Length: 277
Image (cartoon, rainbow, N blue to C red):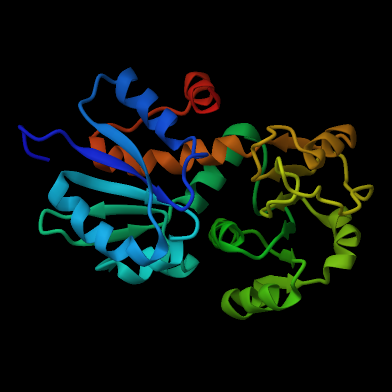
């Protein structure tokens, strides 16, 4: 950033109008009195490379990338962090003065910070985690849990082959079970995570039987529309600790904002309210 140039950042997706990130980053820019703008950009996959190579010349210091660009952004980057490489996708890009692209993935960081904030007594080493889903979000969650010392990750997905692929990549830490057996494995879990879109507004409900949930287990849903999904409602009724998915969105945004605008923002009730506005 030069003294006479206002830094620009934004989020690229296709579609992107639904994104809450502009409201969140706009709130932080205003709260900390920072010069800068954060802009949503709907970019088709075939245009992604040209757009990313052009943005630095227009004053952009970085962008977030979301569906369907996370894997493509990783391939286009000139430099890739270890965690982005391990996850196999990028969600946060920084632009060098020479136009180079640095790719990172802060989804796992956001996931863990959300749990630490919402359930400070939870210890990832206490016991097994059950993860529903085997997409990009699941990759980030598995990588974060593995790094944190979770002793076993039980993975289940509607398409078994995708779960088996993640087991190949992450090794013996991951155990795959068929989707029809998902309800049978939650009873041993210290942590249950839904990384699928099931339960989101406009999507089918997550129909996994949850009567095996143990009181005291931690249950979190990456879906945040609605904030309290069926999974979280039933988990609360079973005496579980629950953490909604909005906090992950907020926390994963922190490293990018700090890098682009020079201030580490706080995730607080005002930030939550801004994202939900």
